[in-house]
Image (cartoon, rainbow, N blue to C red; front, side, top):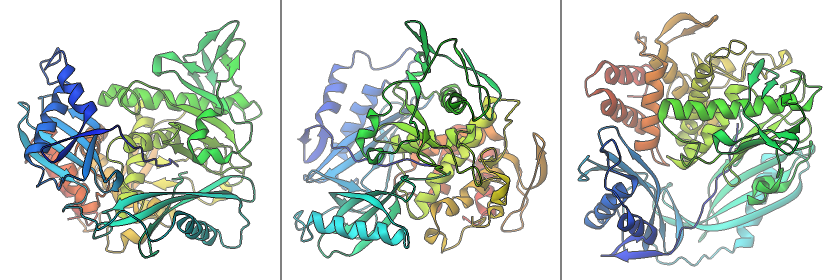
Length: 550
């Protein structure tokens, strides 16, 4: 399952007392008509204003110096009025990888604490690279070819951006290069390479595409309700009640623009239908997969709004869009931040069918939520947590939907997997190692695993926290979840799992959070929601210990 990262340069900023605060931030605070909402809680503008004062007062502790600028990424206000303001930063106008941080404020706006992705001051002798951009691009293209050894790649392109890397030890100037190509079937492949801009040494590399892999008759969920838009005498598969989310047909075409901002141009229109009854429930009708995709988008939107009060994936009320029937026998589905959209392949018919199932949709759209909140780096342990976050919320979306044709379970992609694949699902939360690759328990070598496999530890934690250890049957599916330390864990239910993980993701996790940090983040979240020493707090601690994260 997939998404594509994007770094965005912010507006011109105003430096105050040696600390960079965005002009937009100051204006928002100054123009705010009210300091509290109808419930008496601080408004977003008030929270930003309070946090701006903290940046000035605590610049040294936050590692902020005159060459740096900050930009608000997200604001979370708790029911009791506590405020959490998340920032990105630049250094001499260059994006800082690992520069994100969260400021936590009491209901009265006073400072409580802060979480930083990386600690320490940033100081570079120069931001002029010795390695040229074309050379960095060449190195990235070679890395992409090496990852597809023996396979012919076509239409290879690469684009490089200077960044300051603080995620891998001492801050250094680096080139972040996105190399993209098409494989032998014309489907996209991409890799991001981080290269030391002074020495040319490779710092890190990761897959840019994160795989998972009226009414309508869907392929997997039976007949489902759809909100559509009447345009003239035809209906569009476009939902005005959910931010104008829509679904279009990619016509089995591929486009390298899928890996850049130009993806947003195709398809530009939603599918249409004459009678507002979509699909036949079979793959012979191309609209059937579109029904699944639109339905999955609807249910994911509803889950985040109903359960967490989040208005859309970005929290701004704006919808995303879907492309179905992408590529040739494409065994993938992915989320792309640059166009804020999802793309689904039809599968090869042997390994996978169309990858438009409900849990896959929930997984993919959650990559969008993560990108707008913690922005967990897609490599090492943080990459495993990124994937696990999508698995956890994809699972919770499926349960929340309550579809009798596709009841909730702790399996990922069970509907799209074909019998020839040799197993019944892509991933198993109760015992992740059942997929043959994923880790059940934390170890020092976990960061070396592919992120789809290192995610197993957090998935295992999530199952234990929700359901507990040992054997049980849920919605007709049998599970038997062991613990790594032989302990017995009692679950606290899916609702509390979701509440705790969402609070941790949106308030405490940063781009560099590892498993130890995730334990701290979820304990802080449980303390916020249920109190220190509560049953829920103790259950979080027990579940992490049960997967060897202590």
